[in-house]
Image (cartoon, rainbow, N blue to C red):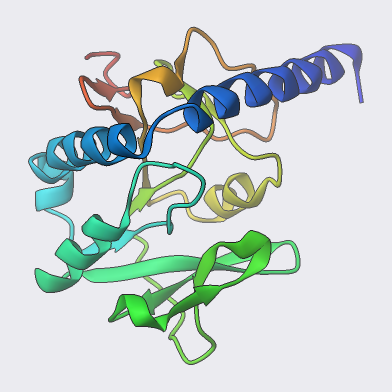
Length: 197
């Protein structure tokens, strides 16, 4: 590991602690209110309106709430898939009801063993993260699961749901990091591809 990569890794760990602490300081009421605004911004956008399949995560630890989005997408007849981790690999599996989720690795709800593996390469992929920047930089949780997944599924559109407090000036980037193309917060939509707000 060269010195620059080592320095970036150290900086990422420092930023991760700072942004996680800021998110943890949010009240339950703030999480609900801001999540609702973020989901409204997403569901009004053509990126969501035109998608037949949505790859999502189940929220934990005051992440933007995805439960309402899962229920809405299913009620609209969209295909919905969530990740399941096995070893160092993460794959997505279709669900037809939230009841098919149960605590998996890290205590995060995952699709059960009876769920079918998802195979939509044109899907809208909602990627979780600790922080993001306006260039599409993403600070994850440190496991590398989404970076490995994105390396193998380049046709999916990676977007993020984030609170304003999760937008950083700059996220250090390492060679294996994958960028997010769109970011929805409670006050802005960042189109990374076009460099516009």
